[in-house]
Length: 490
Image (tube, rainbow, N blue to C red; front, side):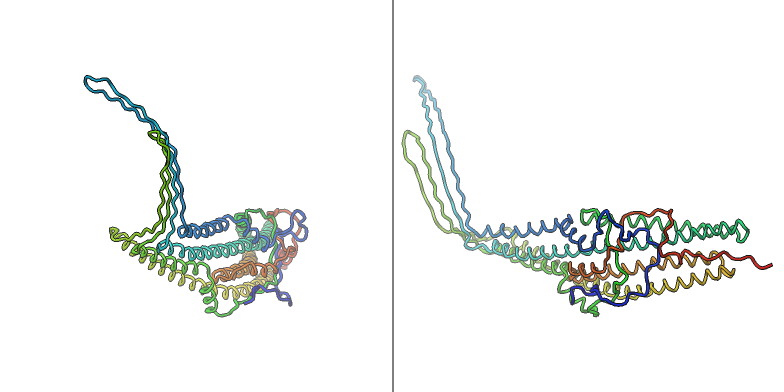
């Protein structure tokens, strides 16, 4: 499968649908304070600075150090000791009818020893050392899973910002349009063309549109903060997604093929499989308690004192083998074997549970991406239909066959369709990356391919729009609510 996959850039005719709503949050070619950050740059920042991933790397290093700890038990052990002491004794005795007798004695002493041992046969230490290989492999898989999860989290946070921006644009434009409708309704009421109920309807629609716009502004702010939490850096501007992004079904097109990819590559599942091997090694370690141990040892002792004014020293050496045979340990070893067996059984069930969960998640995400493709097309068509319906409603309003409530409802349908289309596009991108992550094949190469569909001309800046102003961009057609109804001919 291509590293770029569904996000490989293809040249051709642009989509017939172009963005037509008001661009108040996007800065177009005029950003001089800071260059817009793209998805690839932010992903690299996260991989370098994310605290959770750094912690996972440290845990991997700690587990890797366990191998050296266990190897040390298989290598020679050498120890030395030495001491210097001063001893003083005083004795006083007295017998009846005799004088008292006493003695005072003191001497210095020096001693030293050195001992070396080498394990010749110790099954427990050997199995523990061999187990560290599985533990390191498991932690490496955990680290890879954390890395892929971080890449997905960055992608999700990035496109949540773009989604929030597009939704905000739609609701800002909706608020502007309904505000103009409200102003026109008040003018028509003042000259007696409409009833006060129509003004109230327009006011209610305006208040609802304003509430939606405020909520969308909050979502945009929160979305930027999510990126800062993942990377430890503050981004004022990020690049936006071009309209030409292809929305295609997953490749490979078979759900079973994606399941096979996950069973072979998903790090969390493979880590669970390594846990089974680690538990199996625990049984070997426990059973080693039944076996004898054999050590070779060598030692040398030296001591010297000047007690009783005698000079000289004592020394001795010894070399030999030491064997320990467990005969009865109170049932500890058999209990440890039973315990390890039950834990192995638990690890096997956990692996099977993780396998089933992985299969189910991959199948669900595959289905979701396929549905996203259809949803994007349906929402695109809904915009065209809603715009046509709005134009027809305005025409009817001008000739008096439709009322203001119909116009307001048609306007809301159009802007909701615009917001839903943005939701569908970004949901497709996020779900596609989630499918790759669940299959264990998400990497920076996919980010690089997706990054090709971003452009600075459509950048998003964390700058809330002012509600006053003249510029209406390309939204004139949507803001044109039509001429007021004409009085009937007398």
